[in-house]
Length: 462
Image (cartoon, rainbow, N blue to C red):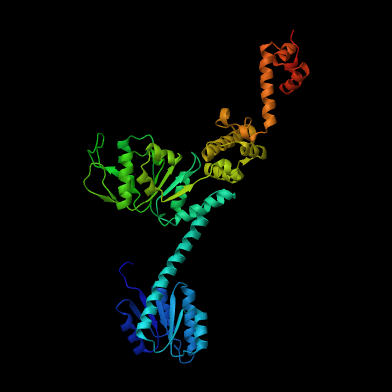
């Protein structure tokens, strides 16, 4: 804890020497003494020490072996702990064995006090640094294994790593991506894998709120602050104290709100509307947008100074069309979330989904397959068929039309030919000769073009 002295454990069966070491180190550290291995092990298990200064000959019967055994035990129990061996058995052989057992320094008695103090300071510092590194590595490992990002694609694996990384930081994060890609879910996963997970995850959505209501939602207000404010209200910033605050669609936050939030981020304090008293809150801010950031800055919808404060880091989420290989895993997640896990996605339906463009991304996919599962269940089937899938934007987005630049050129040309031929045939009341003459092609070519439209189109009209 801040203000506490680092604890140093002195292990030596010589009381006078141990007292001399305690007097030497007592000004800067909090020294403890153990005169045998059992006491040393008990002390290490009870308190968090930053350094051990250990003799080798702690037992008359075992001699230096007793100290070597203790060094190995302490190093195994706490790998971050620095151990200095200070012994009268200062031969090269014992030095090598002590370092191999886990000691970091080996000194012969008597040691120069000034040198020992320098060595102790370095040892305490190194123990602290190693503990921080091990804690960070442990947090990353826990975060990575706990993050539920579906799929085995390169994009899914990269997203899993990015979320795990941002879970280990505490700086403001901006998540960008198209509508429906799962920005809010990514923010929640980051919160759940972070050190703030025990506190609240609070979501603010300023879109469709008036400027006054958006400010009240975030910062809270005092009774009488504006019309309708009939009681005090705690804002979302205060509710997120110790946890994470997500502001969805940050570009919808009024400029005054951006200015106020900038101050709260810098100082950790803010004033509720209508109040002269500052309120403190320690929260981690995550924001999202589906808009082009450069456009937002150029048009003034996003303050430049505010942007640089909230976008210390930027996480970009891929659209669903770039990770279609993950659809089976995503389908399983949707079914599990909706309680429809007994329904499977048939191969033909999956193929249809993998040809669809999913402009609504994960949100659209979830809606389509959920309805598909309901239709399959209504029909008494345990498998979703293509006819169960009712895509939400068929006029712009269906697989029959596809994307113009993803279809073969000759196929587009042939389709256009048929379109012109059918229109011309209808204009001339089904007369092949007049139609061919109007199109300036022969009857045989016209018949060939129309074959794909069905024989009924080829019935000669008088």
